[in-house]
Length: 116
Length: 107
Image (cartoon, rainbow over all chains, first blue to last red; front, side, top):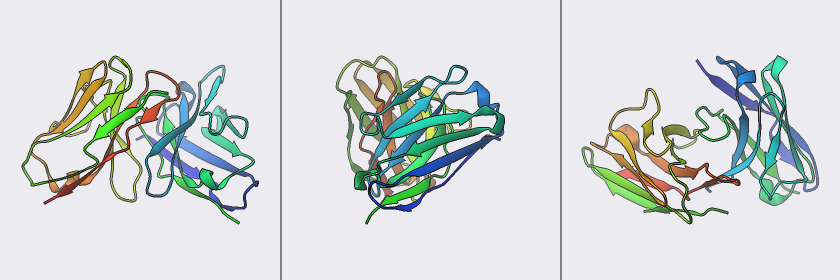
């Protein structure tokens, strides 16, 4: 059974950094593109980034480009999101999701709060 | 960016009713639309992909239609467990975008 679990969220000051992790199980992680999607409190969903499998091509939303870096470690079935220069508007629940388009499985999310 | 305009923003219906949620894209996106269900405090779950394909395990009372710019999600015979917020999503062009959501409640 496919399973994703995020970790690494927390409270950080504006300008600070956090590194989110997502571990997948129940499927061949290295076969799939993987995505990060976020949801500000009480708001809608916003696609953040995705990474291909194999050659690891990366795509980002304009709102995070140059500040966030997506990466993966297939040997550890893990996806990462390095978040630098955090802003108040980055406050959200961050979800990892399998695949880049259908997002057929999601983790429960990890909360990132950016506040002084 | 492609805008996904979803309506209504909220909806109240009775158990057994047929419910329809619509999503209009700001440009032609062929069949590249997915629908998700998000229950309170939980992550979204995929219901429909490529406009009309039901994900394995999703009840058959859920169905999707449309192509181009206009899409619908229909729930036949609404059940109490269908209380949730529903989102459409386009995956035709980056940045992928979502509708603003439809909050469905039971009367």
